Image (cartoon, rainbow, N blue to C red; front, top):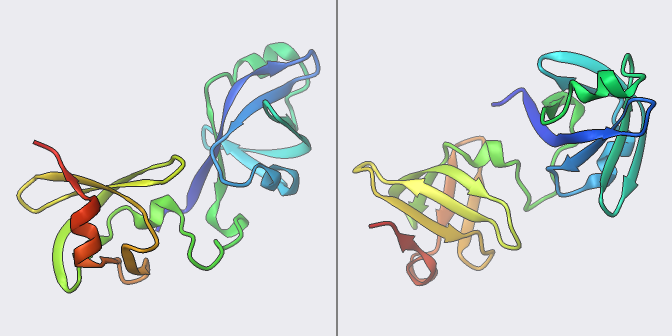
Length: 168
């Protein structure tokens, strides 16, 4: 399993003291307040401050104390180690853990999950062994089992047939 996760992207410096404006790429921006360290370009930085606002998250990092230094981080991604991340609640999953799972319709293997697009309703993308791409919304009434340890994502056949879209 992936050892680190992307949790945000640095948009720009904020102010003159090296603070960074972050676009959260996580369901819970409040998690930034609990961060002790982040990884940017494989280098670890201690988090010295975090503020949550409607228009983003503002982080202060060790060794980033002026606007010029902060500017060097524009567009980069923030990562955290898996062991520094709380386990997801029951019925919730890390996207990275779903990618690579076998998509089973009842007991028949149909495809392998290749992507999950976040949105109001997450959309699963999978590819069949013949290379055909399919997409469907992650709906609780369609999904009957998710076992990331075994690599299984099982759906109800009748409901799946109502919601799946195949690419031409």
